[in-house]
Image (cartoon, rainbow, N blue to C red; front, side, top):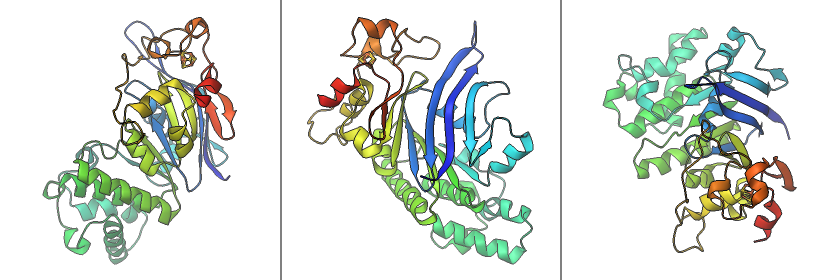
Length: 323
Ligand code: SF4
């Protein structure tokens, strides 16, 4: 596969009250081209910190180990200006709250066209492209919306405008952090369909960060399940969700009735999530794990291949797979 981004052994420390807290610990995964990779986990799992590391949104010195290889180029040693140049162009972002991403005092047309104007296009060419982008993002009668302000749009329409803005730089990778969490359920489904069709049509890659397994099931080709700053499991979404090899993934799947249709009742995840500042020894999931044994309390399981294309960090992954 043609790899766009290779994340290997990423380690992120943030300052804590007493000492630095390891929020991302030896995280590795790939983003192949024209593929959607989902990063899933509860709050405190490190998923957003991992995504922020990729786009340089962490404080200086926070990344203490690992490598981010973007098409053969090491991002961690790239100059600040090179990284700024990547952001918004080759790597574009969509966040949870479209209002925060939009400037309330500027028209939608101006904001979507900003990156195009900076590239030196003529006014008419910028206008034409902005109309195209708004149309691609599913905004009806786009030519009439150029002069609208963000507050005149609904939440869903604002997120569409943000998507149009992200596409303006013609990115290879779209990074979407909880892009539908702030929206109504019916609007969520439409925005997810839009993102999926954009990914497919443009042949771009997407890194989708979400706590919602249903979102992953609909959009992501591959999924990376994170727990307490580490990768618990990764592989093709359909394999991982149909046959989890990690007890945490299994518990996640069982907590959502729509994903595991054969289960009549959803079983909420037992216990409370481990946090990076309060990380249990051994396997961080052991206080919540129904399969935990003595070994799990002391020995941290390594991420290892347990089936073709499938990596799991559990001492007893084979048992979970066979169950
Ligand atoms: Fe459970 Fe042990 Fe596997 Fe951790 S290593 S998920 S505690 S069985």
